[in-house]
Length: 111
Length: 113
Image 1 (tube, helix red, strand yellow):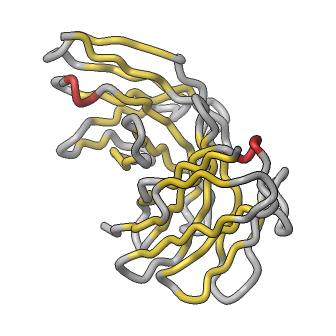
Image 2 (cartoon, rainbow over the protein chains, first blue to last red):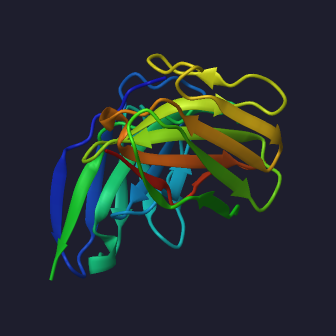
């Protein structure tokens, strides 16, 4: 499984876009980039995933560089409820592929 | 999406005893996994619960300590055996359906005295 590198912590003002970077320089061609977040005392929550193209859903946008060695998760209008630990994970396409969590980024949203 | 019910949600146990955690999914899923999250840490994969066969354990985890059952496509159990204070953690069940997303239960907070 490829490894990911994320900053341990970030903060963002409420209402602004939160941009969370992730480095996955050893990603292989058939591996997806997944993002999860964990709000205190809860199980992790799926946010978004992508292979090559940028992706957007109701929660966030995922920007993957052309060489796929890094990506950025964008929360367009951060709220206090977005305070959480965000995990960037690289995972193979097969449903049998494991999801291995790194240390994540602790995002704090300030009022 | 899959809804995962995990119980108990928390327990306080005595050293040397065992606790079985149950995980029920509201739909059939292909894969189920068990994770451990120690205080202030990230999640660590314990094992993959295979339906109808022995679980596949990650390095550092063994069947004698963490026996796992998965009798069907919607249910799994994890037992934490012969507990010590070092086993105090949150234990999380997760499941993947026929899509690509992994869903998590809310976890079992275990404290061992």
